[in-house]
Every structure is written in structure tokens, then in C-alpha cells.
Image: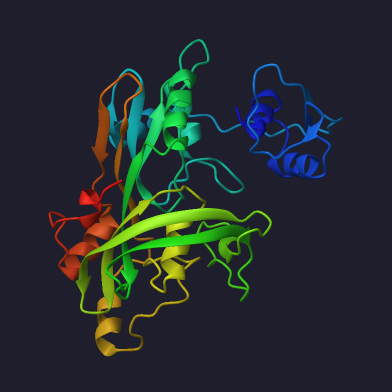
Length: 330
């Protein structure tokens, strides 16, 4: 188990910011050594916990009868071990400041009389729609987590971007780190996005983590917009959004990574087309393929959310078109 999750389970009143501080300053030790919040603990290790000041948190939001119905309506697949949800645009996966309703809280409606409840296996950004995997027990969650960590899970995302990337199929390999935009760009008010964003970093830089994404152009509208199929190899925060911006073709409707586009600007035709596009993030977790913990293969596909379907219709994109990423070797 990761150190931060170990703390979260035993000391839920400890804020993440305070945990990061005491770990960063060396107050938390494992077998006498300094560690990071992502350090994985092994059986028999000794964790030093310094004196803590714990605030009494406000009561957690309770699930409502409507939550169970909403989760059932989102369900794409379910068996005795797991659930695959089709998360809608704009619904957060986990709570935070100013987030009264989120998937993790809603899952409490599926709990049992012994306190057991479904567990999130991975996350999506609030404004990313599509496939979200949930385990019904912690044991299955651990098995699925190992499948994700060992990169046995194959994830395919669809996005609509500004301009048309060249080459039409490629690989983005960059180091990413959290930090403010060097140009001072901020998220738009009411966008539901945190102000922090990922930036391109250099190898060896503090907190820099390597990230890799494969992409392919499935279809395009002249040289103004493209439908991309994207396969992330790593799973960094905002990875696809940051990579799309880094190659000069940000995802439509992205308030955080949508500033730099290489596509045509200021043309009457572009403005006329853009007027019919909803200003929502055009990113979908389209397909998930992975080995099922009990054997066999789980392969689930999510439909386009309404705003992306509208854009596909406007641009004449056909979802039955051949997707090069699906045929690409792992």
C-alpha cells in the first residue's frame, strides 16, 4: 500500500497538504529512512508518525436514494467483482473544495451492512467523460491496481483537437511536473478546474515524471480540426491534455491547456464552425481492455457524450471509421 493511502485509512482527518509537508521535511520515516508519499509499504516495516494536529472535519456528504439510480444509469458493465461506469462530463470522481457531489461519495449508496462498499480503481478529470472502473471489494481493487501498475490495461481515448497533427500518427514522450504556467495562464472562472496545471519539465528536475502517449489521426475537417485516438502508456495527471497542447493541438473546450494552437486562426470558416461547438472538454475515455482478475478479458466501450456527439455530427465524423490505434501493437 502507498504511504499516503496508509495515512488516509488510519488518519482520515489528516489533510493531504499537511501530510505532504511532514513527509517532505523528513518527519515521517519508514524503517528510519526518509520516504515519499508514493513510497510503497511492505509487511513488517515500521512507520514513524510525528505528533499531529488533526482538525475535526465537517460531516461527509451522505449519499441519497437518487445516487443509486444515477449509478445504475451510468453502468456499462457489472459482475460480482467490478462495475464499469460511463462517467458523464462535469461530474467529479473524488471530493475536494467546492465539490459537494462526486462518484466516490455516490458509491456509498452501494455499501453493505458491514461497511463494505465499492472502491475506485483509477480516476478521470472532472470534465473527461467515459469509462471509470470500480471494484466491489478491496481485494479486487488491489488486483486491478496491480494490473494498471504493470501496464496490462490498454486504454484508448478519443479527442477532438484544434488543427491537424503532423505526422498523422506519432508518439509523445515528455517529462511532466506540477507547476504554474510560465506565462501565468489561469483556469477560466467557473470551469471547475483547479488552478494547478502540468508543465513540460526536464529530466532530473524535481518532481518531473516521464509520460508517453501514442496518437493517431482518425479523421479531420480540412486543416482546422482533427479527431484523435490516443493511447496513454503512462498515467500522469492531465497527461493527454498536456501532451495535446505540447504538440500544438490542444483539445477543444479545454480551459487549462487550450492556449497554443498551430491550426488556422481568424478565418471566417473556422469562426462559423466553432460557433456550433459547445465549450466543453472534448475528451472521452473510449475503451478499456484488461485481463479480468478471475480470468478472461474485460473489454468495454463508452459512447460519445452529448457534446462530443454534436461536434462529430457537425464535422461529419463517423464513429464506425477505422481507428488506427486499435490495430496498433502494444
